[in-house]
Every structure is written in C-alpha cells, then in structure tokens.
Amino acid sequence: MDVTKYISREIMMIYEDRQGNFTQRPVKVIAVTDNKVSAYDLSKHAARSLHADRILACRPLPIQGRDIS
Image (cartoon, rainbow, N blue to C red; front, side, top):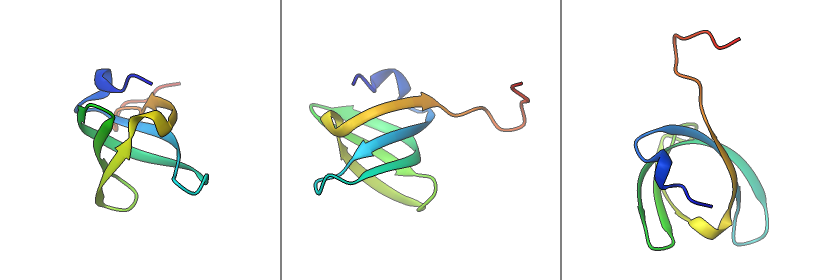
C-alpha cells in the first residue's frame, strides 16, 4: 500500500504484526523510506516503525473541530 500520500497526516491504519495479529490504530505518518513507515501512534503516544507491506488498509482521520456528516 502506498502510504506516501499520507505523510504529515493523521490516518486510521489496519496493520498485521509479525505474529499475524491485526490491529487498528490511529497514527500520524512521519516518513516513508523503502519498505519502512515511520509514524507516531496517537493512541499509545509513541513512535512506531512499521513495515509498509504489512499495512492492509488506511484512511484519513477527520480533522478535529470539523463536522463531517
């Protein structure tokens, strides 16, 4: 999945970890290099390094303070 279009944006991501567990997490994408995505996990308040090929889906999070109905 091409995550480069989400650099500097907050997204909801579905990710499969090394053990085959699926997680859904809100992150802010910091950088994308080769097969690595550097992101900040908004729920854990921690930096993450993710394998791009393990990202199954993502979508932009709504901008706070804006009603999207």
